[in-house]
Length: 54
Image 1: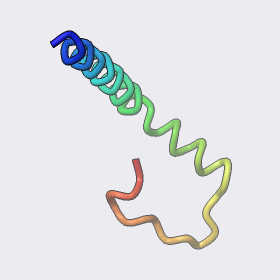
Image 2: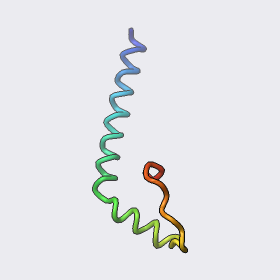
Image 3: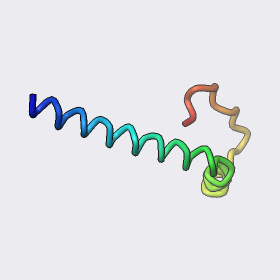
């Protein structure tokens, strides 16, 4: 049971980190996309289908 308890604790920590990261990503999606465009501007490239971008 000790190992299982440790594993559950680890999973809880990981999920908490995930939620923090997703909140952070939600707050600055414009900045991230702007950085992507300034780094490599699209040259007549069609936008990727929905679902492939994160």
